[in-house]
Image 1 (cartoon, helix red, strand yellow):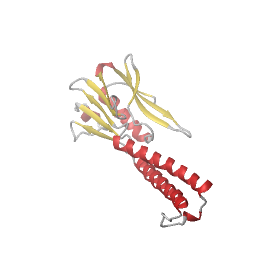
Image 2 (cartoon, helix red, strand yellow):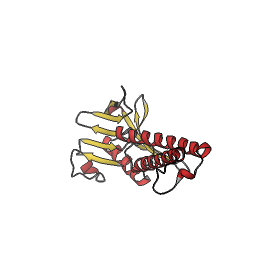
Image 3 (tube, one colour):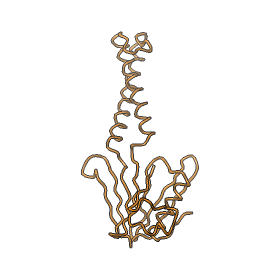
Image 4 (cartoon, helix red, strand yellow):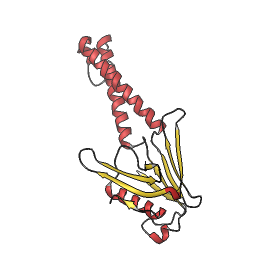
Length: 200
């Protein structure tokens, strides 16, 4: 989900005359803190812990699960297999919780006509490149491009064409945006920057 914020909160993106009075257009980008990631993190953690407890129950012959009796399982090979799946599920859950806590991919796009700068900011993994920040003068922005690809693996994304630097992605990674929302955002940005909108 992308939230639009502007210097003039009362302005309406669909009204060109009001849109021209705005000096700053800022869009917050949701990274790893999406509902789907939370759901998968919970499912992976619960499944991994459940399999691990089942494996330990079959090894120790003590029931560690309140809803079943895995002590009836033979540790080799059934308990070992459950232990393997438990470790894999727990590690996947841990990875997802870490990515969510770091908010990998989250950030914002800011276009400021007052300073004449466009700023793209994203959070990455911990390390020297944890904060990724790119700035371009607004004069170097040539067009907003909409990239649409339907099918089993749909792709809906906005790109910013920068003079001499190619296309810069603006939308979130992973879950594609609804088509209507993508079109509205592309049209609003192109109108705000007074540059062409391509791909529609």
